[in-house]
Amino acid sequence: MTTTFVIIGGGPAGNTAATYAARMGAQVTVVERDVVGGAAHLWDCIPSKTMIATGGAMSFVRRSTGMGLEQSAAVIDTEALTSRIEHIKSHLQHGTTRLLTSQGVRLVRGVARFVSPDEVEVETVDGTTRLRFDSALVATGSRPRIPDWCTPDGDRILTTRDCYPPKVFPESVTVIGSGVTGVEFVHMFSSFGAKVTLVVSRQQVLPGKDPEVAAVLEDDFLTRGVQLLKGARATAIDRDDDGVGVIVRCDDGRVVHSTHAVLAIGSVPNSDGLGLDIAGVEVDAGGYITIDHNCVTSVPTIYAAGDVSGKLPLSSVASMQGRKVAERLMGVHAREHRHLDYDKAASAIFTEPEIADVGLAEAEAFSSGRKIRVTKVPFSAAPKALINNDPRGFVKIISDPATGVVLGGSIVGRHAAELISVIALAVTANLKVSDIVESLLVHPALSEALAEAAE
Image (cartoon, rainbow, N blue to C red; front, side):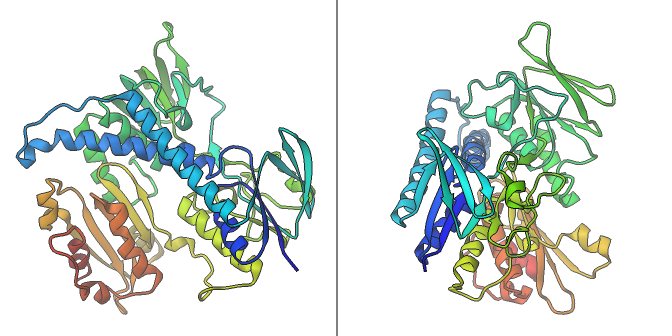
């Protein structure tokens, strides 16, 4: 008997679950209200990283004198950059759509809501239809959080989704929020030459990260001329009297004037309006759908994955959740089945220098009293970093002193997002530091710092 599988949301979690389940014989329908490929992915992640890459290229040009080149000023072509962003988004969206349809997945454009534990109602441009299912997956993602003390206008007071494609590059910008998204926006705008102020509610940027990691990023920000307002919480954002700028007011009395302000204070799940209560699906106080280690909700036939599940808000995690859902749904395991261990998920921050980490953090280990071995090697000791004229940052590896098993690590520096994969694999596979040391790596390459840190 063919399994009927309905997926609400066509982002990384939804489209991965759809393709895997369809390949294994399920009859799959994906309902998407916005964009196939995921709104958070295609409206947030891809455009921001595209602009960051352009900003990074401009920064590289500024450093070119250290590589024996005459420095030339890079000029932003706003129209060309906008076209580039739209082309990449369109390419990825069409690629995802082609993949889904090639697997026999039915795509329905519309808004879905549960009307029973085994049926959803979908509103489309052509009317309303109902879909019965054996199993369903909720993968509706998230949206930027907007506090009650601020009303974004899409012109001067912006959410992250208002920033691209860029209507105009701000002369000055105040970024509220010093988490991952906030620091990426600081990097992006400062690379484009804007005067940037970052409102930091704690005493360091990236409050959840290794203090040494945060310190490297703060030093880079200060070198760029970024103003850091530490220990301050924004309480109001208003247009100025002339209407051509904004005023950000903080709880300690400090005031910041700039041409634009960007809210980067997290996200909220898209769980409202889905009829979850009708289906019997439980949500927590924050609106996130409660799931177990198999992504199963309080209703055994209904799953949740991606940002709406309240786990790590990463596309990589969402995709893996989607795959695990499909495998469990179909009762087929192509490889040894492992439950997702969110503590072993690698993540990256695309600032300059890049930041990436995975597994156990040094501060977390010390706070819990766990004995660890910490080894750290600066990139300034790596020939390739000197060749690249970018010796900033370091590699840090955390291991078990008794067994040598790699428990985690952090990388700050050029290509950290790629280099962290080596440590992530070691953490996932329970490899030892000796396995990294004994690997014959390329010379000269930044990866040599990994082997040295594992010594």
